[in-house]
Length: 105
Ligand code: SF4
Ligand code: SF4
Image 1 (cartoon, rainbow, N blue to C red):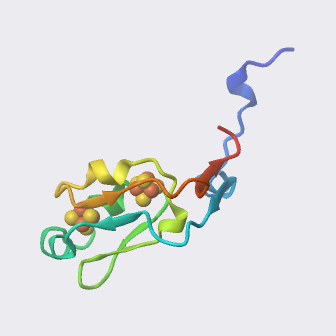
Image 2: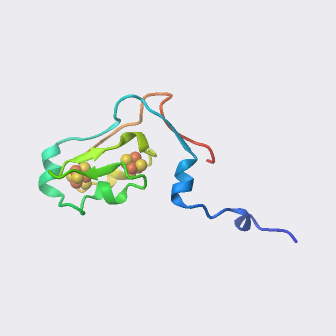
């Protein structure tokens, strides 16, 4: 009996899929906020779009409201810069040769 392509795809968890991603640390963050005070004044805990949209838990809000950014986990999807309603995300690709590498496309 033959199988269709959809039958051969494993239903791996998000954690398992993220485990297949390689990352070369560029040594400094390619992500930042333009004005940290905007984060503290505009985004209440639990309501920051950068935190809720990121699939890799890169963004966390500190107690004073400013984000802590675990840039080394970034998948370079670009979602955070569009999700921030304050247009307060500084975003660039990591330097050439660094950053994320996808093993399975
Ligand atoms: S959504 Fe934008 S303004 Fe709010 S915490 Fe994130 S970066 Fe700051
Ligand atoms: S680019 Fe994507 S993975 Fe990277 S921090 Fe932004 S939302 Fe998260």
